[in-house]
Amino acid sequence: MGAYKSTKSILVHDILEQMPDGMFTLDTNLTIQYANPAFYRLLNLTSEELIGTPITDWLEDLNILSSCMADITQNGYCNDQETVFKRKDGSLVHISKNVQALYDEQNTMHTILVSVRDLTSLHELNRELLEAKAKQDCYASDLQNIIEERTNELTHRLLHNALTGLPNRLKLLDDIETSNVPHAMILLNIDSFNELNTFYGHGIGDELLCVLATALLELSKRWDEVIIYKLPVDEYVILISGEFSLSQIEVFVDDLSHWMSGNIFTIQNQQISLSMTMGVALSDASEEQNLLLRADMALKRAKKMRRNYIVYDELFHIKEDYEKNLLWIKRLRSAIEEDRIVPFYQPIVNAETLKIEKYEALVRIIEEDGSVISPIHFLTISKKVKLYHRITMIMIDKVFDTLKMNPDRVCSINLSIEDINDTVMYEYIIQKVQQFSGSHQVIFEVLESEGIENYDVVNSFIQEVKKYGVQIALDDFGAGYSNFAYITKLDIDYIKIDGSIIRDINTNPISQLITETIIEFATKLNIKTVAEFVCSEEVYNYLKPFRLDSMQGYYFGEPSSSMNG
Image 1 (spheres, rainbow, N blue to C red):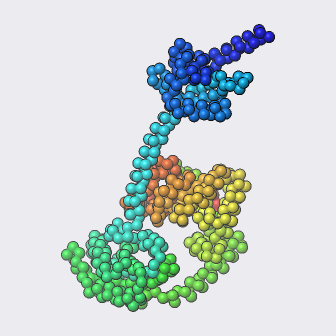
Image 2 (image 1 turned 90 degrees about the vertical axis):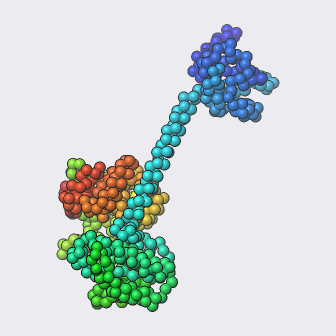
Image 3 (image 1 turned 30 degrees about the vertical axis):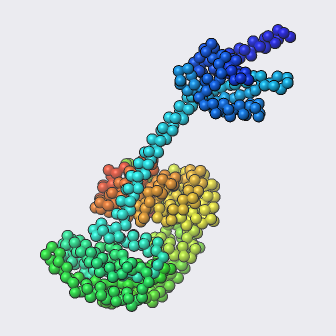
């Protein structure tokens, strides 16, 4: 029996001596009684330097020791506690320790057994990671500042007329939409401005537009809440906000008309007289949506009747629109019932090789006589009569069927925020993606301009479909009131640069700046870019040096009923 104990003791001693982790014991006075070689190596000490010394000599933070002893007193152990030892040379060693109290037969503690594991390298790694993160955060902050500055610059450019500095049509629509007060809108058109440009030259024409802008700003000071906007070519808008009567507005318009007819502008020693035609529309806070449209209708009627101005009246078009809408509702319902809603596929080519790498599915109606109707004629009406989601479902079904027969093709499908926000539609899309084995062939294009600020819903949708290999494109980016924050908040694969920017990029410096900025920003985020509406060889040649991934437009191929590339 004695030999067994002796053998057992030798075995335990050998185990302790060979253990890679440090082991040591303390008496109740916290004096080191024993330590294995691993612990000596950990502190770079000899047994003579360590044995018999208080453990407090080698601890950096005695508060940790106090906490550990409190646990031992209460529970008899202290596990997974991190602490810091200090070597003789002052260097620190981070360790994780497990502590167990040993008791005699009278349940009196006589020894404390401690096992330690070196965490110094892990702490060093954490330190390096924290430093790297701090650098990354600094870079991200700098990048965010650059993005904000560039976004502010682009936003100002997008919302203001470059020639006159006045806010433009986009800003007008945004101001109307975000306001909750009544408005009077006066839409002014310079009569025969094209002839003036031809006769005097564009230089004088541009200067005349600027001088007129300044004059309108001065004239409008009689009202407290007035903003002057510059619309394309030869039109301006005077937007009056607040409480007013029709008679007050008519007096102002009469004065404006008389001032214009009696004024002569001197531009580069040329004396030029102008006349203007105006359309006026009034609304309360609940009727803002079509205010510009109504003012434009009044302007057209005034032109037709050769009057200085006309105030919009509902009788102008209500019967005509009513009959037109009823006709389109009937045609749309027939097209759905007779399965004449179809996808047309437009090729998207690789920007370097010009080979077709994917398609975009565009909705069309095939009329009974075989003619093809584009969505501009029916999508808006489909939303009003609650057929819009049905059209989206048809498109998804038919595109998926086409992709099943063409497993080597990739195709994008347009989704609106209305589709994603609709619970039934949301579930339908998810179910279709789950059941389709070729989901990796699918790209969903989400319109950037359609209330995408509802990040939670959109992000949830994106993350769900991406589980099945679907990719996401942000469509029409750069149109309207774009926000670069969308790109960083949504897990997207492609940015499609809006056609309104691309179509004149070879001649428009602002379009060039916007495109360069979008590509640069997307490249840094590893997001691919697609230029839409590449409509001519001139546009294509200008885009060639850009770091685009793909291009799309009639220059490469018109939409057709099959993936024939």
